Amino acid sequence: MQSLDRALGLLATVARVGRATLTDLALAQGLPPATAHRILTTLQKHGFADFDRHSQEWLVGIEAYRTGSAYLRRAGLTEIGQPILRVLMEQTGETANLAVPDGTEVVSIAQVETAHPIRAFFPAGTRSPMHASGTGKAILAMMPPERARALLQKAGLPVFTPNTLSTPKDLFADLERTRARGWSYEADERHDGMSCVGAAIFDENGLPCAGISISGPSGRFKSVSIERFGQAVADAGSQITRLTGGTVPGSLLQGP
Image 1 (cartoon, rainbow, N blue to C red):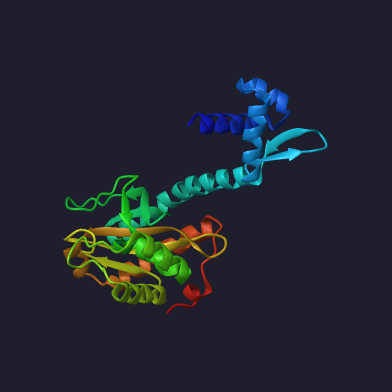
Image 2 (spheres, one colour):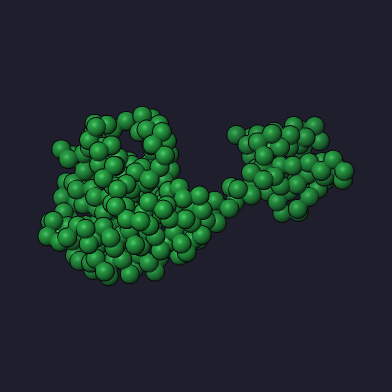
């Protein structure tokens, strides 16, 4: 932990000053030059630091930029998505959610609740397994198949309710339907009595990077046209994709 603390301190110093010599960085962090050099070369190996041989100065590497850009994209996603979530909630009458993938799970980052007294509530930070989540299934369906299989093999398919899709055959059949129509439907698969309709949000390469959904009591979902809900959610996902600089895959633009 001490090494990690020192490495983060050096990286933060380089980011703050722009570029600096080994001597200046070692002094700023109160480290022996040999220790500072060892840490900086490790950061350089992983792309978080770079070394200008001409000026003999250290500077931030491309991987640090990528990491920071990922945070900015996530922050921008929430800011851009919030008004679209509100419109989606008003269109459908159900709670609208925004989530991002994290390994084998999806993590809620924003929500606009419906005014219905009985409603779904997933505070920011709530995690759900991909295979039993409307948003998770929407993201899985739009991933390259080999990537989806690798994630599912790592996580397994734990059962939460009698409706959980807990066999590869059932789950991949459902993902195929999701991919064809552009939105997912999760009915009582994570929690009895709760349903969800989700759609993926795509990055600049047309790969799923987040998801949007509506969720609520299953009885209300069964009493309406799920296709209407699905199209509203898919349209909202496409809107966020465009506004965040992403690319909607051509197959979705053409429709099922």
